[in-house]
Image 1: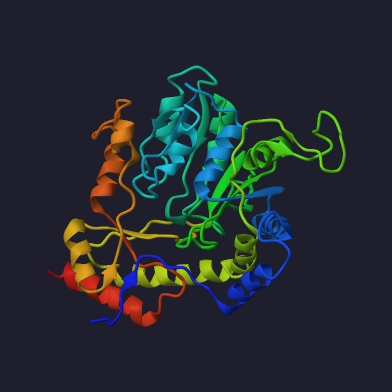
Image 2: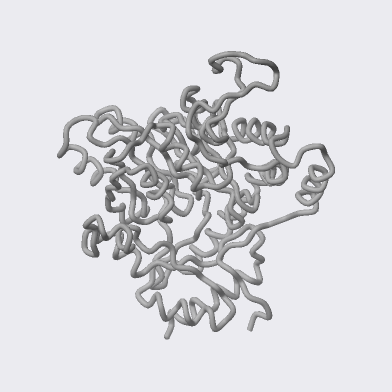
Length: 386
């Protein structure tokens, strides 16, 4: 028996991270200071986008994207049911009518063929936005989605909260990082403790569109600006204007300092996660355990390592008895009581619902030791041989 518990995900905080936070605590700024701008510039450079706007969490990032797109009550927005509910909630806050679309049985991502089936049934521009989720760290085919966006008239907001560092290869043979917005209008990230970059709470919006960036930045801070190019008048160096009804969705300098330090290890984290995934793949190759699909030309960020098993609940409980705390992610959003009130019900999306009945996230984080992973594998195999 392993003498300590193994969670499905865990943050990694180093002495360098701690020192970065301590230095910020000793500085003149705990919030609204230079570390935020530095984090944004470093993140933009890593991702390959023109603009990054750091915010208080991933949900705030989604909400700000909806505000930047001027989503209004009754606007139709499509997303996947296999996601954390924030992917839908961020747009629902503004009164959007959320429409769900079933998933691809291989990748567990929004099925783009089924998406087009929905789109072609309505006139151009019926849907204001589509919010694909790079679930578990697997990147959606943004190039194919862009073609649909141009054909049917919607904005693309990629929920990339699972996928910093992930990438895909387009038809030009160019490797594109998630969040670079080569094909999407905006992308959202989360810096929750179990994510690749952990700042406690925190998130980001990336874009190449200066107008969208300005709107996200404005709404992040109460709708207030001091930008002289945007002010309606000038009354001195202290002068500011509240031009829109925004929110306090700011990130702090303390969090930004931690994020700057953590960003330096992102490539290592992705590499280590893929090593762990390959070891799982090999261990479960000739068993009844179904391991994650991935095709050539993509870099999977492996926020999660999801298996499919016919005895999900029994395996979940067995692992817990052996100090392994796997997780079930996610309960389909359309089956939540809140969304059922709009007519969604079990049976609407058979692929997503079948996925949910069999899914289990095994421990996946870069500091998972070989000994710990061996224990997880041993127990999963022991259960599967029953």
